[in-house]
Image 1 (cartoon, rainbow, N blue to C red):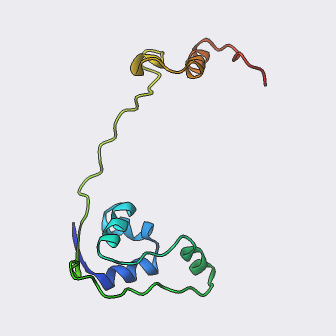
Image 2 (cartoon, rainbow, N blue to C red; image 1 turned 30 degrees about the vertical axis):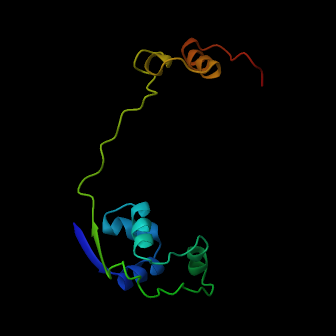
Length: 127
């Protein structure tokens, strides 16, 4: 789905709600939304803004300002159509019952732990 917003609309959305709440509504990740804001010279709230706003403390917004000459006033956001496919884990120990079979040689400590799970013996150190 495609969203076409102005800089002012996106600015208002971000400063009324958190970036992490606005991004799923637009169908993109919060990192992608932050990148769009940086690209279009839209100031973002700092880390304590949301907490202060929620607590009812007085907060100040950073002003939007005038758009630079090379930045358009319209922002087009194309939402993801589908979720990315999940990749299998390279540390799947159920495959052969051996951790090191799929990733080569592990460091000695992790080899001990992988072997410890199979043999069910106590680790070489005491607690």
